[in-house]
Amino acid sequence: MSQISENLKAVRTKIEKAAQQWKRDPQDINLVAVSKKQPDERIDVMLEAGQRVYGENRVQEAYTRWEGRRDQYPDLVLHLIGPLQTNKVKEAVSLFDVIEIVDRPKLVKALGKECKKQNKFPQFFIQVNVGDEDQKAGVAIDELPDLLQLCHDESLTISGLMCIPPFDDPPAPYFALLNKLAAQHDLKELSMGMSGDFEKAIPLGATYVRVGTALFGLRPSPSGA
Ligand SMILES: *Cc1c(COP(=O)(O)O)cnc(C)c1O
Picture 1 (cartoon, rainbow, N blue to C red):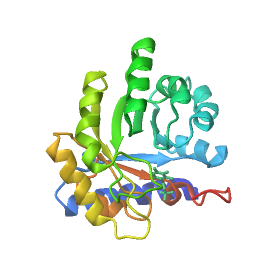
Picture 2: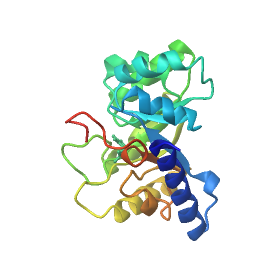
Picture 3: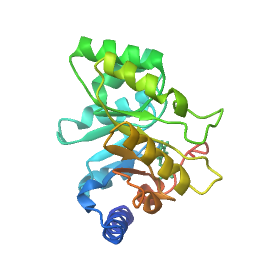
């Protein structure tokens, strides 16, 4: 068995174990394989191993990689997990099934318009800047209610919330915070947890974990973090 399919098995086993330990249904925890910046050969192995849900952080890179694979794998599910500029909204709506990084009014309006135009309605998550970090994407916590209202007005269906906790802090309090915010707004899905901390996100309610390096190995590019 290749390293990558072993990794996949190991990550799935960890998800199942954590789910059992915390009395959750493992079926409720979806694994998003983060394929950004990974070489195509690794993607092919992962596809062969049966993984169908992938996360990408750049629209153009994702387009090049996935557009041609849709015919062969009609059950692919593609998540956009990196920042989205409004000038890329057209491609994003046409390619992605789930857009996890909705975080500002301008983007909501552009997405609303484009979805109607294409008559295509991906699933959306709102990214929350849980650590209140200047440099990080995501809506500020106190602006979340207004953004949700705007999504409603624009007919964007928000499935849940997504976060990337501050790099240097223990993540659990931020996962708990995201869980609380979702409950306040009656949102079901929580996208949180990456290679280093997905097992910690499961007790706190993660329904999607986004795992890259633990599945594929290190990203080759020097700026691959
Ligand atoms: C890159 C990335 C991941 C995956 O990170 P790993 O540490 O490789 O698991 C998850 N979520 C987002 C938003 C990312 O950009």
